[in-house]
Image 1 (cartoon, rainbow, N blue to C red):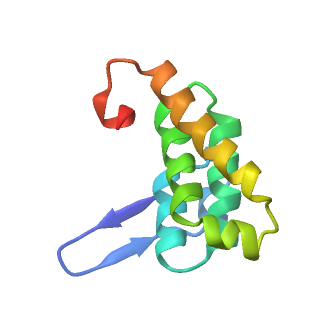
Image 2 (spheres, rainbow, N blue to C red):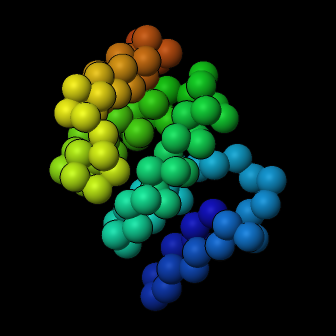
Length: 105
């Protein structure tokens, strides 16, 4: 979990969150801090833990789109897998929440 105050940001470590469902805000924080390996792991856990959550699919697809170079060069993903993962994530988000236009863009 993440708490934002006017002058500080306090992040709970994964040890503090034992048993908590993986969450995409935490993954986004990890990605913003440059820990793309950990962010990828948390995004994948979030999609696996909550396959009915359109936001989890959308955020994972967006991460893959934004960090395609990392996925290809560092994580060893073939370019085709990246494209298919991005397309699939956006498609699933749209199918799960057809009236949510934020997830449709």
